[in-house]
Length: 268
Image 1 (cartoon, helix red, strand yellow):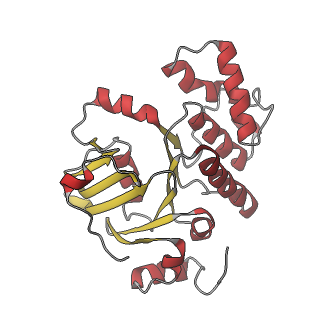
Image 2: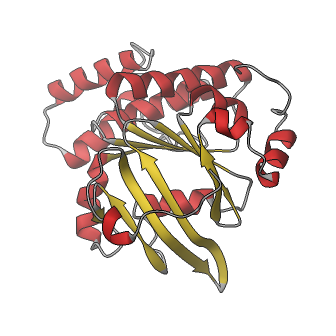
């Protein structure tokens, strides 16, 4: 499990039945400081893949690479066998229509109603009528257990509800891949559990590939199918939740111990 290697680049440059995203030997530096250091990672298709790690270890930068928002100094990122690194911005924008993004603090427009927040990507990227958009928004709000709140504003919603609206906005474009940036940050334990449940149910219902950036190990053990730990800009451990619990890697053991997870036993 403590293996940062992957198959050779020619082999990962093909669409794979199990892995939707394959990252090979990624390197990135900012102002002479290496942030991503020979990182290789497979993201499983239709599963919840969680990337964990402490602050400043490279989690968010890795996600930005996966979405094509940052280009690496070297390395490859294959999405269904196509390397996105050399893509033009035009082609990347086309590719990103297959992605959905749920931001850390929901990133809703405060001056817009829930309806207009969720409608925004539909108006920007489709030619759907207002009636079609209204139907889509009604259905997607029901899917995140927030029916009938179209006319409310973000300030009228709790943190957990705002996260759900953020997910609803991501879902209206029917993405194949959903990215979540620290989805439980700032939430109380009940709201955290509700968001975890929503991520799991969305994955199960839609079969989307989910990529979650997190440092919340309780949430991670509740919903992850696969976990990868990033430390010093590279993947130092990867596997199932059970394999992580049983890991002898000292970096993993320290992270779990300081997260308050070690010794809890059983399901969280």
